Image (tube, rainbow, N blue to C red; front, side):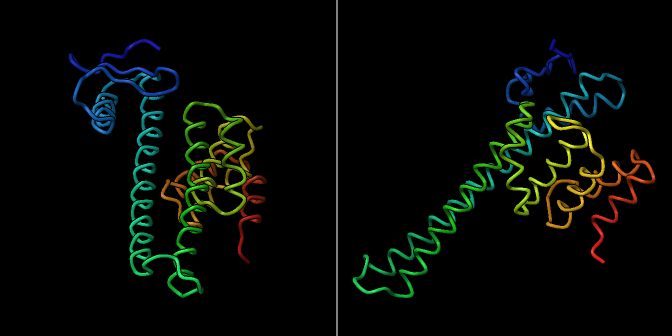
Length: 209
């Protein structure tokens, strides 16, 4: 993809499925804002694609930072428990049980988030088979953001046959489980593309009655 000239000192492009920009000292968030402002007065499909991919990349960066922050908090809690115990006692104690539980929870969260990041990164890089392999099992277990990406896979025919009913269902579940992604907005957008019969089926599937 060729460079798109946004301003005299900012050019953007996609390189290997990742957003790139030329201006030193500009963060990805700032570049997204500048491209978004530029698009208000220009029509450029390639820049639209860049903006979408950059948004996915920024979201991935934010989630990685959140995971690292959460890991640091768990590590601090485990260290505090270690100090409280003062070494591993010969007999089980409530403190040692709490430490074991904290470690178990930490490892489980790490494993889940590692799989999600791998799936999200695969989606950003348009490796849809990889995205499906990582995100599908997580979505089946109720991971809200994985549900959102499953909705995108089915709505965009990305690695799977296009299926608006399934996309609607996954967006609905993502919203129900509290996804930070705009799941309700995506569900409304999909509803406008569906036939009356498809919409009826989707609403029947997602009805809690």
